[in-house]
Length: 109
Image (cartoon, rainbow, N blue to C red; front, side):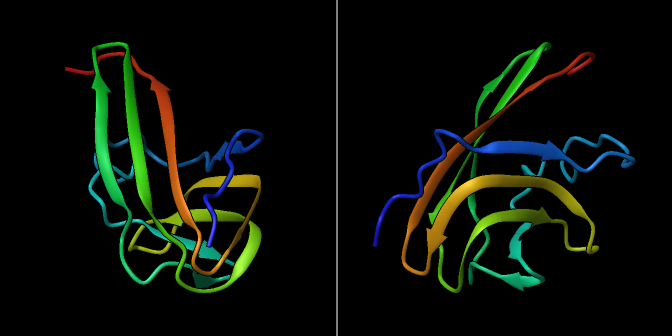
């Protein structure tokens, strides 16, 4: 069991989707972590808004990998579209994770 290292992680956004506060930002806690179409977690991540201003939102995701291993995963919305892709990492079953996604926004009230 180890802590997943996100220091060299690459975050990609699945473009072409509408930017909605709860679903696209995955802050409603219903996104699953998927690797090769298989869930790598039995439960949803713990999602905490740690910063929320009209120009920036920071979201902390924490939890543990419960199944599988790999070098990337996607956050998948329950309606089966991929929201974010995190790559350039390494994880195995039993590892814990904690990472923050910082998002610059406009019109956030």
